[in-house]
Length: 353
Image (tube, rainbow, N blue to C red; front, side):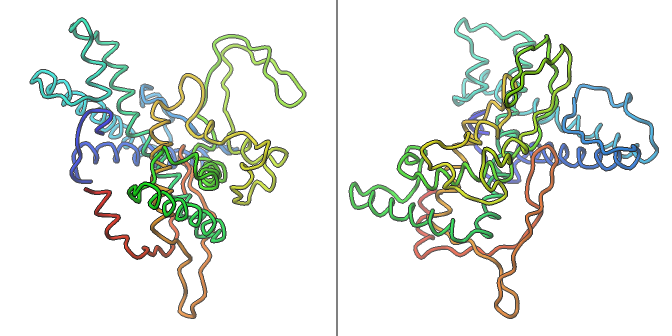
């Protein structure tokens, strides 16, 4: 929010945060409900991986059971508009008052000629600014949830990454007395932890299937393996990132969580290139989300231990690898144990200072 609008959030209950969260949750719920309705009424499975919010809802199917869904979409459109309009209006009022903090929106609204931007440009700014929070935070949360699940299921991976992070912090503290916080600049010094983040984005892709795209002209040079294909203009294309990132010819034992696959001399393709979409419609907040994931995951490893919850007999309960796909894939609720290291209280005070 601060990056997009120069708006400092003091509480999760903040109006702008709540509107953005309702927008993301509502969009996910609608996609799940529509998938179920389509499967119930169609002879074959239909997977709705994209929804054009500008398409009038009145043109949707008239199945009696889908009418509540259509009402919900109407509500979601209003929430989506509030998510775009209200923070944008807040920045405009601050600019008029001369109190606007530097931000993505303020920078684009204040032209060098001091002339107001036209309506079309303003609309583009609104959409991209809203995506910086909504799109970036949704993918970040999904990846971090997958991180907790993978650390619960693969304690040996966690132990190796934790050892690397803790050793690096101890060495850095001895050398220059730096604070115990991992930052993006530290990533080159933590190769295994960096590979762990790559594997978090591959093992369960944040975006399993990229929303449909339509080609504007014939493409006669689409290469797949040893074959070349032609895609005619106006063809609807889906990018199956899950299949790409689970190809056993490229990623050995694709169902296993193996960060070391990215530490070999000739590693497979980096999953980060698929995690935030591709082409001209890729997420504009991708770099922000990547750095946020890195800071979160590396510092959790440095300060907490994640483990299985134990039953009454002291036996660890292994969570299932079950995911919900509502455009953004995330684990179904699962249990894990999180234990803070000694001295973690001081670290928490440091990062919230």
